[in-house]
Length: 65
Image 1 (cartoon, rainbow, N blue to C red):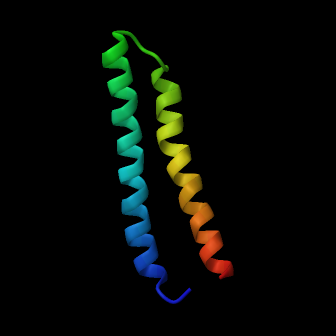
Image 2: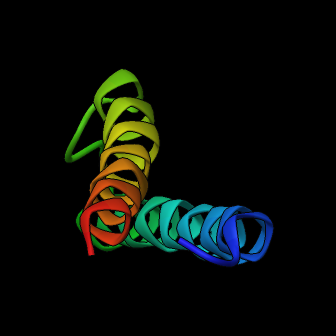
Image 3: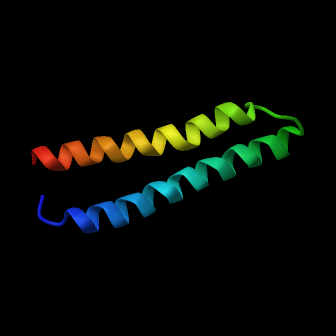
């Protein structure tokens, strides 16, 4: 991979934004329902782990190509 530094800068920003969007979606679900649809610990776990694993998967796929 030729541009590792650029990948880590923009990939990290992209996946941080994805985590924030997921957090906002969960917040909207809670507001619409009026009560916690998904617990805060599960929300935090999903908002961190999904973007992180997505970033790692993208990195691995770009390394092999």
